Image 1 (cartoon, helix red, strand yellow):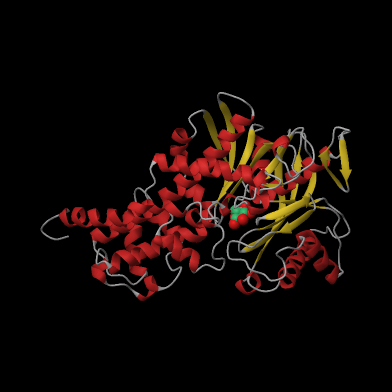
Image 2 (cartoon, helix red, strand yellow):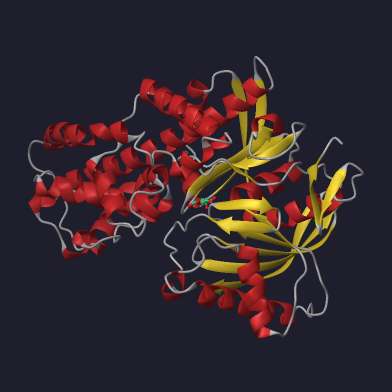
Length: 472
Ligand code: BGC
């Protein structure tokens, strides 16, 4: 620092703040965003408007949250990020708990994430085979839940058509295909074991269901991790694309696609546009790209580049690392924001990125990180407020008290979205329940609920599981 003490920071920050202004969303703007999402959700649910809707509002065929009486042994598969997991889960009614008996993790290398669908499913089938061998489970047919965390048009609980890849996956020959069929074909190609039914689950649904086992008022599941999304229990009479008027069905909103029709143009910054243009799926999942872990670090990097070019940082000197795409990891944001060690972490990270910094630089970087993560939190809060308020209005209640099951590292590191909820959904009291392994255990729970529902007398059997309840 020079003789002027902190004055240079004040001077620079005025200009820096000007550059960060487009990321600051007022409460009014957030309410507007929420109103737009509400309209898009209605469009997504409609029979004739669905195909053009940016927010897909996908029926999941999950018609009930857990009632605490579920039990049994299940296999859970989980694919949604850079790893594939298989778990053996035991649901114990007496103690109302789910126990992970064992599990196995298989990395999905980049070349498989971008290879053919056949390679991906062969890899998954091989991992599953190894696990069944290690557990001596070949020959047994445990009911299986598959958490597949991508947007799928579910035809039935065990028929799920991938609409599009997200989060860095782009395997050929899978979009438009039934994921269960591709998995079964891969298993048949091996010929060393077989599976019976597979209940397909989005990770938001898994999160809602696993939290729902602990707290039966949980009727929303939300993920803010590598990607972002939410599901909730909708009244059947509003789910126009599925037969039946009674009861409820869980809807996978796929809110990550919000804005894909240009409806968020006014809040997109020049940096968001670069992130989208340089992604492997330009033009899709606009909302997700402003919020989730796959993109936040890159937004920060682009802002830092811009500020450096404007000579507001690092004396105008950009390092080779900072110039390189995706070198500023999303985890750096929370490290730099830490209340006690944040500034020290910033200094270490900037040094590792080959930058020459001073204290003012470190503070500016911290301000950039706070701004980007706050925008993410506020946008999520606006979207969640829309859902919560919709549930309240659906039930004609003046006030709603409800629980949201949450998962994802971005949420866990930045729980500040809770603060905005009070202003955005003033008529709702919301409890956040952080899920413990919702993707894994949730798949088991969906399968368990599916099995107990299939014993219900009013269920029409959709072999092997029951999901469509009819009045006649
Ligand atoms: C996918 C969703 C998923 C979310 C969180 C998004 O990219 O489209 O299906 O729930 O990521 O994993």
